[in-house]
Length: 392
Ligand code: NAD
Ligand code: MG
Image 1 (cartoon, helix red, strand yellow):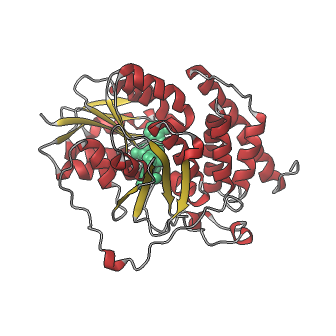
Image 2 (cartoon, helix red, strand yellow):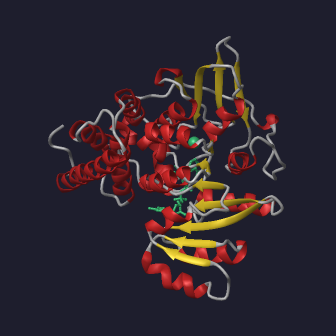
Image 3 (cartoon, rainbow, N blue to C red):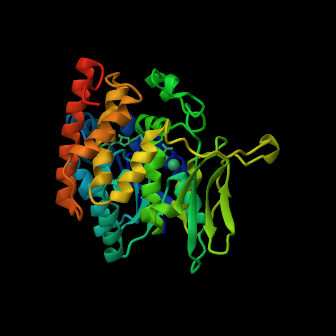
């Protein structure tokens, strides 16, 4: 029986690579549902090629175009957020790949877990926002979460059943500004930030990688996926991105997973686990890498990483606050409305201003997300008008 896969965010970087994996194994995998936020033409092309049972476009204005373009095929066509949340519950689906970006991933992921679907998790924001809630839900519903994020897939591939981890060591490329001074960071542009040295990804995660918020989020993601305490998670800058991450066991042994940076491998492993199956990614040629280097991350220049650890230590709804503030400032940075370093300033202030909730439930996260977005938006507006932050 072919595994039926729903890809939430099929038009993005992870989504299109997931379709490449499916195309490489038509005997094993089938796209059951494809969804996109806005890019209707790309979704039409994908639907005509992969012939899913259903497609969902979140933006309702694009519904008619989608419906009309697929009228000759037996494909169910839906629009809107609710449809996205409901499609994951369809009976035949085996795996839901969460490859949409941001907080929008939370509700459909919760629905998919409740419906008993295995989750191939790319949308790390779900665990950042509500790691505790998701972990409880996953335990209640007995569904697996298979990591797609390359670092977490690496850790997952190194685990030994029954043997406890002493430490998780997440590698970070350091992004395009790894060697920049604080003065240089003050004037970097979005064009520079969007140029990542080792990975081609969506705009939001590319900015998060440049600001190191991505690594902060990955620390949170590791905390929930592997049940380790924040102090057991270390970040090491490794610019070559050959070692995708490591684990250290209680006897001091360290295991790493290595490979050419290519997201198709962790995507496929989430689909094929526990099996490994052939994949046409480039093979690692060690003679091309004369050195593999490692550095400590500089949380003085990259404050987001420190803020993320701080949020994880505080717990409760603090990571949700950081996530919402970050989504607002990244969007503002992409629209030239805030400077690169201004992003951390706003996030830090939003952390101080939004009401803290120690034991949040779903409704608290919804309220927190809305409040943090409002506060962050106000701070960005204020900063835009005065081009500085007068209260700092
Ligand atoms: P992307 O911007 O390339 O694609 C995002 C996809 O999500 C698109 O299909 C878009 O239509 C859809 N989408 C956007 N907003 C949405 C919304 N509000 N509701 C529903 N769908 C929406 O992003 P990406 O780089 O593919 O990243 C997707 C997720 O995977 C992110 O959470 C990111 O952190 C994570 N991730 C990505 C990579 C990578 O290499 N790209 C690596 C690790 C983790
Ligand atoms: Mg990653």
